[in-house]
Length: 303
Image (cartoon, rainbow, N blue to C red):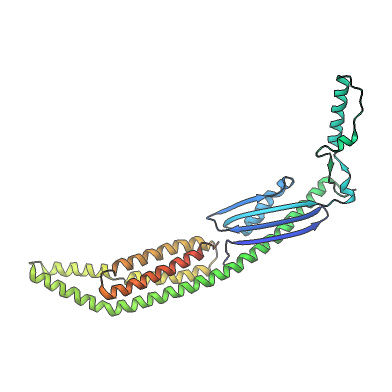
C-alpha cells in the first residue's frame, strides 16, 4: 500500500433533482481519528453513513467535513404549503375567535408569511420518503467521490514524504559508515593510550595488575560504540522497510525514531572525551541527530 499523508483536501459539487450539493473534506495530522461534520440539520440522518464511509478510507487524522445544500426553486417546489402547519394555525385562530367572541375571518396572506408555511417540495407524483432516500443516496455518492479525491491527494503527498524520508535515511547510513571508519582507525590509538595510562597508574600505586586489566576491559567495552552504530544502521534500514509495509506506518516510525535518537545520544556521550577524534565523532553524531529530526518532521504527517 502506498504511504498516505494525513494532510489532504477535496471539494466536489453536484446538481441533483432536489438542488445543488457541495461537499468538502479537509484533513490534517492528529494522533487518532478525529472527525467533525458540519451539515444542514436536514441531513442528520445520513451522518452515521458518512462517518462510516470516511472511517473505511481514513485511519488517522483530524477530519473536517462540510456540506451545503441549495434547494432547486422549480415550479413544483415553489408552491408547496405545509398543510399540517396551516391546519394547526386555522384551528388555533378559530378557537381564539370563538372563545373571545371575535367576529373575524383568518387572513391567508398573513398565514403564508409564517416561517415554515411555504416549503420547497419534491417533484409531483413522488413519495416524500422516497425523495428523502434519493437525496441521501445522492449525498453518499457525492461523499464517495470526495473521499476518492481526498485519497488521491493524500497519496500524492505521501509519495513526496516517502521520497524525503528515504533520502534522509540514506544520509544517516552514510554518517554511520563515516563513524565506523573513524572508530576502526581510532580504536588502536585509544587502546594504546589506555595501556599507557594504566602503566602510569601501576607505577604510582600498588594495585593488583589483574584487577586493573579487568577494569580496563570493562572501560574499553563501555567506551566502544560498535553496538550503537550497528543498531543505528539497522534502524535506518528498518525505516525503509516500514515505508514499504502495510498498516499504520506513522506510529511505528515514531517509535523507531525514538530508538534512533537514543542510540545517537549514547554515541555522543561515549565519544565526548576522545580529543580530536571525539570532536569529529561529535560533529557526525550531531549531523545524525539532525537527519533524525528531519525524518521526524516528515513522519508527523504520515497516516
